Image (cartoon, rainbow, N blue to C red; front, top):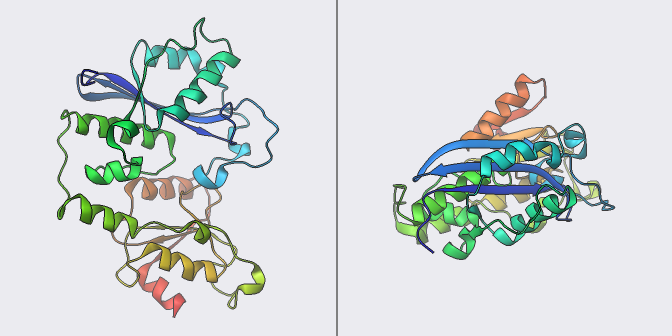
Length: 283
């Protein structure tokens, strides 16, 4: 395929494991190598019988989408936005399936299979966050539909030479090593039983907790997560209306900081803890 310099990047989040259950959409329009337009909306999903949902992944709850527009109501705006563009996604197999399910369910178009998709995962061979590390792209909040669509667009532009990116000092190997030091092991994200929590008097007990940035005393994110988990914290990776505590280090994600400010302005009580207080609590 000729290098794409005009396209629409797309990302969906789903409320349940069903591909029909789109609950958020992010779209980014690129023309001649320039990002010119963005669109984001929550979606009231097509109902299914699943009791398990994906709220812990993206922070979107059933209450948040109950009064959101359906995909059918959004379709005229989405249709105009996408037009005849190639649709670019990271892991296009997933997003294409969600897209097609919506078009079929709501009979939006005569031929729901007419759209051409391009996958940046197949192009890079890397998960989206690692592809962003490769090009030193700030990906914002992973599993935020607009941030992921924007990151996907930037990755394709960088791969095709349409966007200048700053090379990470030390090369991709060092960049990935530092990135992996910020990742959690899966079981760190599972709250432990109250009976195993020896000190229930800290702000972390039963608190939905998000960690952002780097910490001099705790260079490995998972090690820090384990310490907070032992205090009864429910470790999350995204900030939502249910977040209780955010632990902030150097270089905290700007999109996370914006989200905290927005939620606190809306009256949500989110406690911020910086490294000196964190050290004090843990000691």
